[in-house]
Length: 334
Picture 1 (cartoon, one colour):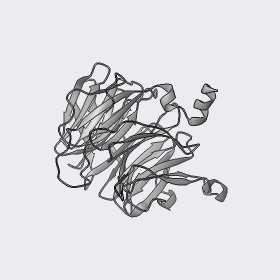
Picture 2 (cartoon, one colour):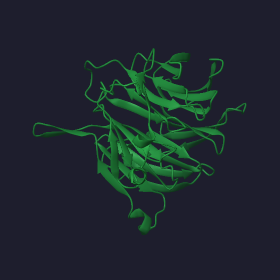
Picture 3 (cartoon, one colour):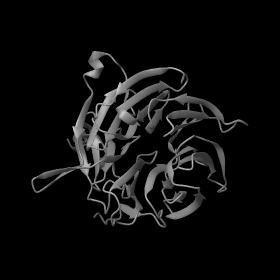
Picture 4 (cartoon, one colour):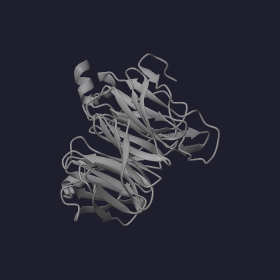
């Protein structure tokens, strides 16, 4: 385990499984953490203190910021909540008919998108007296979503991936089947805005592109990761965390093997592997300046009930050499 000063554990972590870590959009000191302990907690990681803890009626499955002082959560209690991060107050905007798995803020439309196990995506305008704007039915449970500018990418059950233009949700831009053969765990849009990466329960990551032309589609690829050989057996671990560095364009994956890898997607190379964490990695998030990585170390119950390390979050301070694409790094060393 890395015990250098480049990494530390947050004080007073959640008491049960961690579902999501998320940095504020313009303040790298603010981190929001949602958990199965029925809370969403705002931390100041520079001071290593809890700023506010927001109680819910059931497990909180996702969280996101709209600004440095406002955030949203989705819960197993089916409610969508708005959190006032300055005051510590919260309110219910509305609800789904089943657990809410995903919450994503869209800066372009200034609306909140939520995805649920009730097989719908709903859009919300928190400024409106009636926040619920629209409901869009999907063929399967929503498992993961990401938004970048005008694109919404939705991963669902049965390996379905739908792509929408957030300005016209009544039409699906593309309906795809995932390149990965097993259930999607995480999805994230490429910083280059031309595609997305997804990870699965079967230790694989795929990088795919929006442009349907054969020339562009020939560039898509998938690779194996988060696998270990024990004796004669290869053990395959789910890839739960997937996050792009917003400055350098490289990305991190975190698996149930307790490993975090950094990847150069352009050159299809692994840049770095960090020492194993005490338990599986449930979620990852980079700060907006690309200088911090939040790592949720939390057992994800892939093997059912068993003894496991306490749930916690590590904050890692990153150097440029850890994040740069391989080609840029070689250029600096030339």
